[in-house]
Image (cartoon, rainbow, N blue to C red; front, side, top):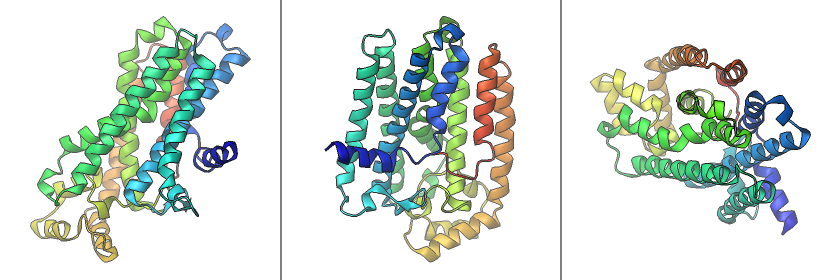
Length: 314
């Protein structure tokens, strides 16, 4: 059993760029006093970082099963590997259970323990609600009138915004236990949620315009409520809308190509680049208002990692 769990973890957890796990470590180093940053404490921050990676890994396994995806990071999705199949569902649950085992093993008895556990539980609960909303929005008979920016925001707020960057940074805040940081929690939360939203819009566009860099995107076939379809509906002519009504949400390669060509005709790639630049500038302005210089530097470094990303960080 030990060897099997090791295999599951090595295949699904250790192959990312570790942006989210490193965010825990660097956030902790930015807010904890120097005397608190002992070798043992940094090691525990790294363990929290791996718990974040495990969280993302088990959610990705389930997401790939639901989406019936073939590839993830250039390799077969875990459920597509030889003899795995739907056993991947149990493997995802094993990873989730393992992260709580690690938290209990290394943090039980510490003042931050309950806050750490509840942070994982709350963020995971909201992300699963977001996954439900995402699936429901694409499972019914296609109705383009239901694809609104408010509907899209509701999905992203639950599914992505908190788990992407708020989770790792708030874990670091709880672990450091610094009162002066808690005083600016609302300010940090605003920035982190905006960054999470930005990250999801990037994923929507990377999956369409930069195929293969993250996963074999099936957003068009599944009729997902993405940033791209929202923007397309804002720009289409009546004739172009008919193309979407005929082709969006249909598992036909030729119809998928027609939708992608329509996105190109509507100049959505440049619309995304404009959005990306404007969001970067807005987030930079918010970050400059943070009173702690170390946190300013941390957030600008994190923003720099995702701005203009064209490769897989997740």
